[in-house]
Image 1 (spheres, rainbow, N blue to C red):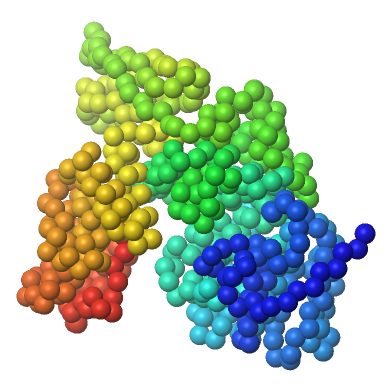
Image 2: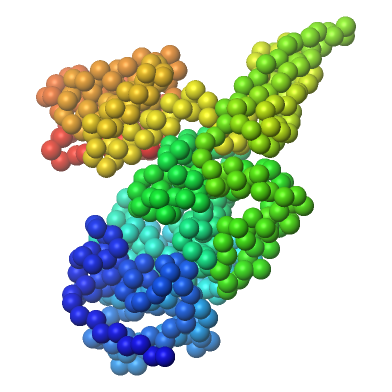
Length: 558
């Protein structure tokens, strides 16, 4: 059967597309793009409808065109007519054109072409290195992806998504060549992983998005894990846990695609916060070696095919050598996270050593997890960690130490998906940050104040309240909150002291009180921290006052 479709109209706004305020298909004089996500051609099941394609485009002279072609010869160009053939089924119809500055680089085994607008080529090498390093690492770890060894990054306008991945190519909005460089580098690692999860292995339906989005973010997250140790690694784990908890009760990983808008904050926190953490939890549960084998087997078995979460569960159970139904029911299909507590007693032996005996408890039925118990004690012998397997409600531990025990800490390195009083405060505060970003100031204030009810000394919450009031030009209340952040007995994170003084100076400048503003900037100048180029900001504001009419403050989501 042959069906013919005729299109009419002008592709220049989001109207008619799947998103109200982002255009995914655009035809313009300087550039244009067509994304699979725009639904610009017919299909019957989004993200789960692979097809072959033979596409010919005609354009006036002077334009460069990028699209995927899996033939040996590659795409052809004859007198402004471009021909792309996709002979292996995939998500088709991703094309872009424009008048670009082209840059060709090679990292590892991948030829990477960047097509950027003039003046946006200063980050190309750093971005290409990040992408190339990630592609090489994933290939060695999982196996080869479907795109081969040619990868194209093409710049589009700021009216679309920040990033959008297709087979062998990546659309990047222009703002990402000017904004937060570190955030863009981390995002590029995730986008590279989509070449494996979602593009080489497809989905049976969009309800299975955790297998692409969550696994892509886990792949990128594990790259960052491998480069860190000690306190920095612990901070990475804690931040991921906080993100996982922010909207965790809203929907499960299985239900989020159907229940939530995939552009909403709740969806993004669940899929990219909780999603990778559940993969990490699976790694901790079955062991690293079995988990790495599982990912390789998943790619090999479903290469060029479509998989569901249930398919992944069956494969995971086979590789683990046990039925993992309990794991997927709890962490993928359900919501809610456990809270752990420990009861223990300390005994002194005849030889002068100490034995700490106790029980770790949690509040969920049918829970099986390896849990690290750290005993912190006096002396130079160091802290000791014992791993116990919690089955159902509790598990016993018995730790010997030379020095006098000081305290027992459960999950000291934040390996588990769990809640605690301080994590509960962080989760509420992050919800406030998201409301702040979206301009919902009243709801943001409500969330921040709810967090303070649980912890009146939380410097991070006071700091974000200060930013909120500064943005609303309520300068006196903003200053009060920055002072409260600095008056806390424990200022966390450590960078907060320098930035609280900078923002306090901004508030004084906005009031026209230059003397107090300079005093605040001087305090920041004497602070040893240069986090996020703080000292450059100090120099700028000492040189010229902050002007609220031209400069904007936003919530800090670090």
